[in-house]
Image (tube, rainbow, N blue to C red):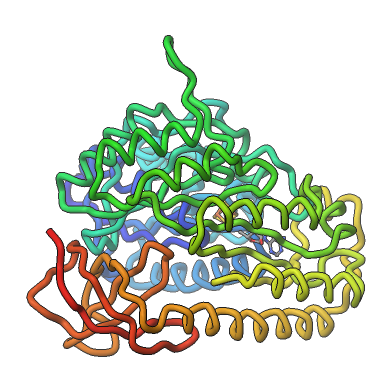
Length: 446
Ligand code: 5AD
Ligand code: SF4
């Protein structure tokens, strides 16, 4: 029976969620299911969901209505909800709105084969229990939507920072690190399959820790092990928390050319009052001190960030502080959001969501406009330089062009030559937009 069942999986949210979908694909392929890219031919539809902002949840609800409409043609269609929305919405979506046959939280994916069996037998198929130790360390992900060059690897799960706005500690549970040896082995295996770039994922990779009989491996140590075992593999990571990005880590990144010179360091706000209400555990001054040290140890390193506009009690002056910090740092890139109150967070329980929506919109607009200028000026600094690019594939705009990334995570497009995706080339940068560098290949390296 199972051998003929086809699963379609749609993923929302962060890279961690995309990585989880690859774990789901691995578990279900092992137990005999097939995966399809065509929703129409699927027997089972899974949606791997995100709760970070209300908007993300609304999109999923709309998709579920559409999936439900497909039951008219295929009454046996099974619809399952995975990921961060699972625990929060199971009662409403499953019992009240009858949109779902199965619900599985982020730590329940090993049980998916049994849960699918339950759907067939009419029993409730729900598992949203969070675990203290699940890391899926032994599971080799099935790469979905892969370009064959870059891949994500989860190195830890959960989060215990309790930023007051953030739903993640409640949706993904306690922080736990994955066995270092399995991570190093996964990168080696990817290298052998032709991959040349991995991004190590965790909510706060700086607090990675793995204890073996003989040693304690922290994040800097893990990076070093991976860098040494695959010198031609580029290594990136996300996300770092500013409170614990150490000098030791920065020095490690400086030592190895394949550790990419790009750091994502979410600041969230430039105002000390906001940072305190957000429970970020650093001040504006401490954050700027870390930036100063990054610039000293890693000259030319790109720095990107996340910013929230219109958090609780945010005044115009708080907002100005964010703009001024952005100018001081001169971010190369940023992800910018307006504050969205989430249930079961410290902010929802204790702080008023009192910045009017129009004000949030205006402030976000100002932040985005400023970042566009900063990104353009950061890219303009690259013009005239010769940079090493890892070719990722053919550009969406033109079949005669390749695109790839610099170590600083800047995207560049350039005319195709005999080089292939997965190869490193030297490209002279000749022009730029705020998003993309333009260049010409001048040689290639094997
Ligand atoms: N509202 C808006 N943005 C949020 N983020 C996290 N929680 C919220 C929220 N409730 C943003 C933060 C975080 C990024 C992943 O999403 O900037 O770093
Ligand atoms: Fe990722 Fe957070 Fe969204 Fe969960 S809620 S998918 S951890 S961004």
